[in-house]
Length: 65
Image (cartoon, rainbow, N blue to C red; front, top):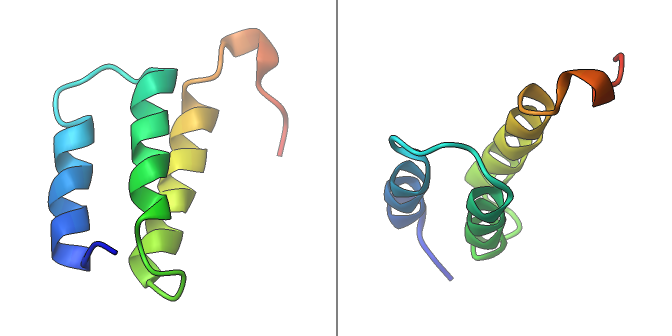
């Protein structure tokens, strides 16, 4: 399992200066899966992935909240 400092560093490397793609989000999800289930960072990153997906949906497929 990865510690939170390493996970944060890796998270930044995944997203820094890159366009959002399904492959990029898959890498981020893999990182989340490597964190302990009790880690607050795991929840935070998982929530961020959901938000990024929502923001990057094509305009016609966005659902109302």
